[in-house]
Length: 238
Image (cartoon, rainbow, N blue to C red):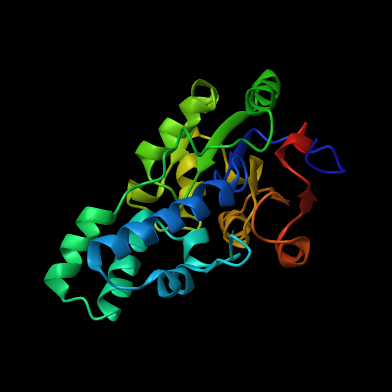
């Protein structure tokens, strides 16, 4: 389990979007809807510039690996969106109104499409006395709603989110906070994620295993230099 040498962690920390749920299904749809709302509220043509700033390939309907949309918090994306609106010649006061009218968060129930049988996976981990943590760049309210919709909230031992006041990935703080909360050393922890920032966070925190999954935006070539192990999905963990 987790590595050829049979290492079994005391704690597994998962990223959320791209690792447990389909990233593009949620966030590409959200960005396209946001662009439409902004154009209607401002009267400006800005979708193409918003896509460029966020890191979205409209032709492929795909978020670009490592782009702001893939790694930044909602608070940072809000600021970035405001800059895009201003750059289209919308006055600052009007930009505030446009953002207030257009901004929304993705529906964590309708758009959360799991990438594996998560109740089965989490039950298997807990049956082995392995604790489960979530470290995500999403906000807490949406994260908890997503976990509840996926029927795994009661199986998760601790969650750290982007609006908890800690430095975001790839800083090690999120993972270290989970280790502190659950009283598990990083040296007994496995970090599982689909993005380079997830893996870098695990490495900087001193996680015993840093595991990549191929269900997100990054490909094997991008992930391999940072991972101890690469799996097709979290379903392959057990």
